[in-house]
Length: 33
Length: 232
Image 1 (cartoon, chains in turn cyan, yellow):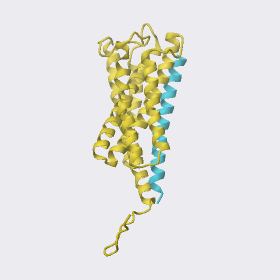
Image 2: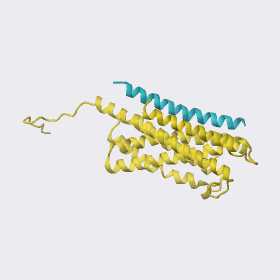
Image 3: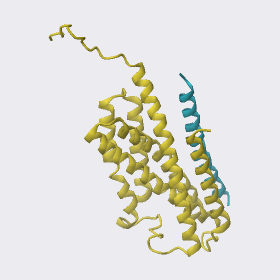
Image 4: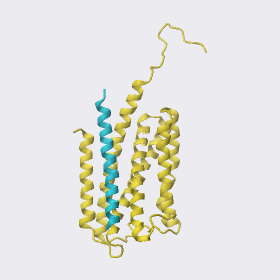
């Protein structure tokens, strides 16, 4: 059970983190003149 | 909220639905127990990574033929998203292997070729980061991206070409019960949609970065009418 939880927690952290980081990068780039 | 953020919200909603199917709809495997549920996102991530690297391949081929900056940007976007999905595939696979094989890693053909795939495209990203942006770097990266794709069929067919500890193909061999197959296909569809949204966002980032780069470059010296051109 613990391996299942760690596996999905890792996937959520990596995929979700990458999505949020990309959106924040894009927002930052489009905001700057 | 711009269109990229709306697409991201839609992609996250699809992934949550896939999570619901994985944990509440799919039956528990009789032999492996709950840890078998890792399979759904592990395999979907691997296929999404293949798709991303196919994008790098097509982008690289188009760039070498036409030298359009759009093709180079698509390839860059595909490579970074592909590396992210390959990372998820590798780590989830290791976490499945520990309770099933009693080890996180073994140097069998599938695992090793997948690690090589990760190294190839991480190298591709490193080349892009270290080389001065321009035509030469883009052409070199396109060649790396095209030759790197040779590893994708090796990864895919490794379980049939060699005797491996990794399980063989079970989806194409019709070895999954209908509920598990439906859950897998739904998770695969959601993961591919998520990957497509990520590539779209990364493409937009690369477009803005390219525009910034060209804006800061010194303008080329063009001789005005009547002014004599410099003779070398």
